[in-house]
Image (cartoon, rainbow, N blue to C red; front, side, top):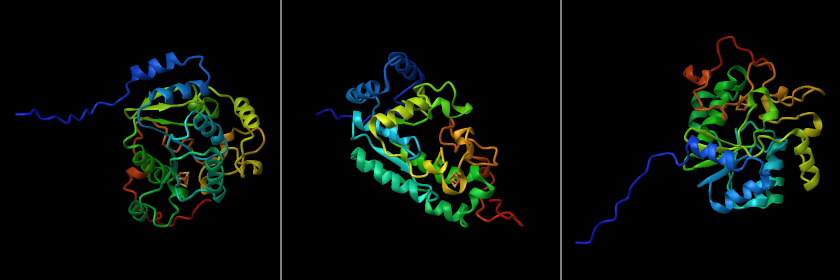
Length: 265
Ligand code: SF4
């Protein structure tokens, strides 16, 4: 009797911390473009995608990835609270760079109905709002990926210091190709490749997120100071190891505003 082939499902994560350490050592001192070209040519990242917010600095990472391999999937998390300018900028950049696999992931309508029926959750529970509009959709988009590429840089804020190029997050390899780039490096790259700028940058928005939670920054201010201004919040949660449930989400997530509540801004 012919032997039957067995389907074996290996539940182990494809990448471990030892793999991330080895990649950091291997590419220490290698320029970003060369590193990406080698990684893609070797298929070393497995099933990989680049996640972009199409913010003020996103064009650099996207240009680098496109130059190495235009077939790398590009994922955009549309929170349904984006500036129209960001949606237009996404179209402009994708057309210019020629990516062949572009997708948009949005919040689950059922979850929005249950937890943010008014659409104002951002104004009284930004952590909970980010959880349902950014963290959960991105988590869904990353299912099936072995690795993802992020545009974070160490200089962006004190919470992003000592950013390695390769790290493990939720059992997945996370690649930060621009981790050690400076603002001057980015500006030089924009100029060298004549990349289009986000339309809101000229109006003082140096870091662009969702419309309700982004404001222009004054000269000399931290570029991310305009994000969640007035709140003790500096990250949306998609870069937190393990993505613990946000405080607001843990409260049960009722969609109604608290009694007597008036939106503050
Ligand atoms: S940035 Fe603001 S609007 Fe966007 S998901 Fe977070 S809290 Fe909600």
